[in-house]
Figure 1 (tube, helix red, strand yellow):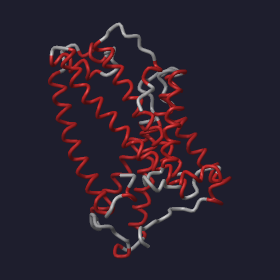
Figure 2 (figure 1 turned 120 degrees about the vertical axis):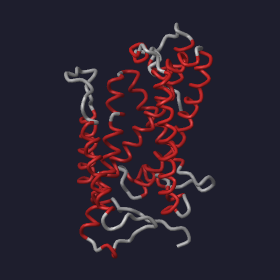
Figure 3 (figure 1 turned 135 degrees about the vertical axis):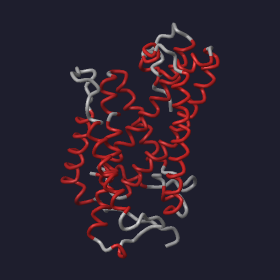
Amino acid sequence: MAGWLTVITWQSFLVATTYVSGTLVQGLLILNYPDYGYQRWHGLDAADHIAEEIQNAPTVIPLSMGVSTLFNGTLGFAMLLALLFCMPSDIESVLGSDTFYPFMNIYAYAVGSNAGATAMISMVTAAQIFACVGILATTSRMLWAFAREGGVPFADTVAKVSRIHEPTSLPLVSIGISVLVNLLLALINIGSSVGFDAFISLIVAGYYSSFLLAACVMLHKRLTTPYGEIPWGPFRMGRRVGPIITVLAIAYSVLVGFFSMWPTTARPDAVSMNYCVVVFGGTMLFSLVFWALYGRRYYKGPVIEIAGS
């Protein structure tokens, strides 16, 4: 269940990231060319889970996560403050931006020209496009790892996903499958933006559900196993602080996951309804049925590979 939830969530994240990249470009076009005719299909051509490929991962991965969170959180908060101070007094005009992204209008208002705003927005757009590469790397490796353990259906056909391409040391088949899935999911937006939004709404609930499972397992281990017998990594929070942090993480994951499934209005219609609960429930049902019919016989569980062993 955790495997399928994580794989499908990352596939959703990949299509959402590329979608945002495409619509950012569209926003720039709308900002500079008000007569531009927006079409949903115009934005479809935007093209910590790779620990096995990192040396000394138990130390490097936690440090990287902590430093990146601190660094990006600080810069993000500073950018938020700057945007708030530069926001025009007519907030409704910003929120109702034709570009779909209010920050574009704030940039244009702050610098006093579309040309200056375009230069600033282009840096954000470039960063978003570059992020697609990292998201694709993670998505493909999640699929590859799950396939390597026998977690993918039709094993005889999809087993090639678990083969690493030796000259490049890349899981090229899983990368290709992820790209293909991304393209197919993007086509949903042409027919129905509601259907597309329903699928990518799984991201938040899927993420925090996987976090919740890991935190619950960790808490159970702490409460049922003597402290000295737990195989700790290079970082730990001690006997008292550790369980408190884990409980807080569980509470926060439950809270965020719960409210991520609620609509944004009190009386939603078919368009404004949040279909996350449907997609999430469908993912859970699929994973349980898959386990009963296939996974319990063929799934090998976590496969540990150590170079040189």
